[in-house]
Image (cartoon, rainbow, N blue to C red; front, side, top):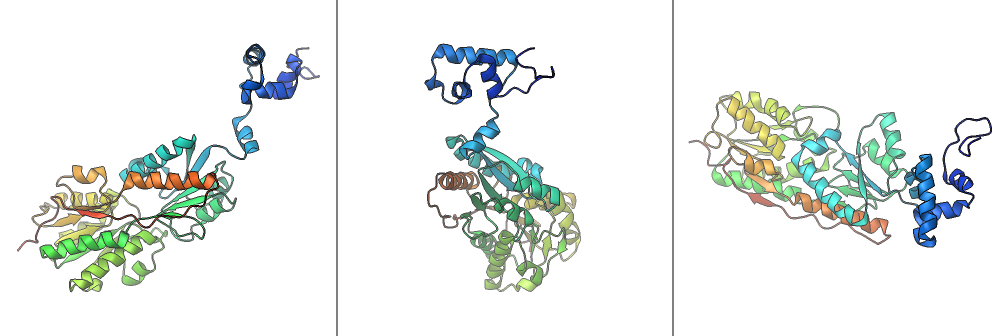
Length: 364
């Protein structure tokens, strides 16, 4: 009977123990060949690895080895709007790039999870083999956040929601939105409209009244709308007279459809404030379809200063935020938590208005 067969002749599962029995040495010696090679002579280690290769044994399970050490070497990222969003939205790509660069310093990888509320998805989040979680811009009271917290692993939040004991990395959302509205009113615009990302995770789109704006569970949108409203009121524009259109996702196609009817009216706004660059690109597309000149007949603004903003035609007036730097900041907080260091979220990062070609004085 082969030493890799059981008593009944069936193949025996290869493990450190079976390899040790095959070689006639202790399991600890075989383990040292993989985990502590300095404890063995080069000749003995070479003999062990050669026999392992001959038998087709790949070595100890890295997952089990990580669990024994208390680490698996991965950080989970909860992503809203599905996994494809992490690869198609320019702001998400830059954030993840900064996060990955920082985590690489400690040999950590990323495991992306879609933040869905279904039972099976929540179970997968609870059981995910990760050392820490990054919550990337989820609404308040999202079940996926509770699932990620259930195992007691460290958590760092990007933008939202605020969680007790979890450091948060944010920006001056209110100030950024206010700067856009001030820019437009100083140009002479008195008829504005706003396009926003989801305010709540209920799949609703269309006009959003003041009550829905103030009850938004996506805190970033709530803050940006509050900043825009304050600047409009300060300029003498009643916020209740400013149409706010909600999209179900941060998607240019959805934004284009959302504003199509509004821009086709004779009393259309002279400026549209989009609360992300992706939405602003959709507004530019809708204006082009209707034959409206930007900025001659319609001014358009965005928020984020993603690479697409400068490349747009016309180039997009927007609010710049440090996208990649924020990823690095989140990564540094995760590394600190995993080292057992006391960490705290930084003050909201400053933003700045970047004026380009998509805004001008309203048509006379």
